[in-house]
Image (cartoon, rainbow, N blue to C red):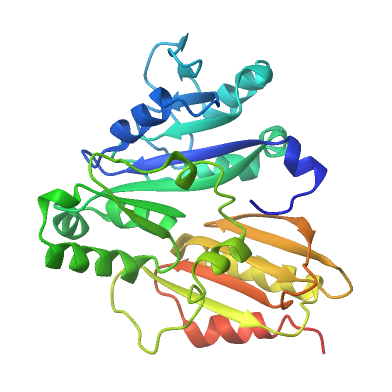
Length: 327
């Protein structure tokens, strides 16, 4: 986990669990709820009616709260997610984290945006990770007939590549290559029946790029070629310190102009005249950021920014990011 400030330590970590129909989300959720890991989780199961133009979350189920055998609280609630989280905060002492399971046809963006746009929710919770479960056998077809499948992969911080026993090793490698063309930055776990260590899914500190770099040093290496696929991912580094005013002006205009195509943006910034790391994240046009602790003495103070989306212009993004450096 990243070094965080006191405010971040007091926030409840939230994991968004998504994946296409039949991929194995519920199997993974049941593992979390039944394993003896010593932690309690409030689980919000979202049955989407439809996602309107204002990204309201419509939950078409009866309100119900009950405790699982291991002490987890499972909530199936009518109303919007902000109200659900607000209600959970009244029982804050009864759980260690929140898990939100979306339906198979859901775009994770409206759920993720909830933790950016509402001040009360943002103050009391933090989006820890988006976890996407993928069906290794059927993903190639899903990518042809469903843009939701590609979006779920693009948004992911952790990908559970499930049902690996149903494909050959060659097919599995090809599927993982397809995933990497969409999202080069998520951590991928190959599984059967969603069997993965719980600590690889929960409390990941998804926006701590330093942790990811420690696990995968090639995480931010640029590829020498472009993909023609609908969704792609790009990363950039700037060695000089970043001017926060320049960055805010540039990223604000970029998200305003290109926000619909920018599924996820995240990075760690080295602001000039500040010894703390600044974590930036955005979902479409909704952005947020905060300091997450000091730079370590032996680590390079390099600003890193990742874009995952459609119609990405590498030279334009690179020039824009580099223009934010101090003179």
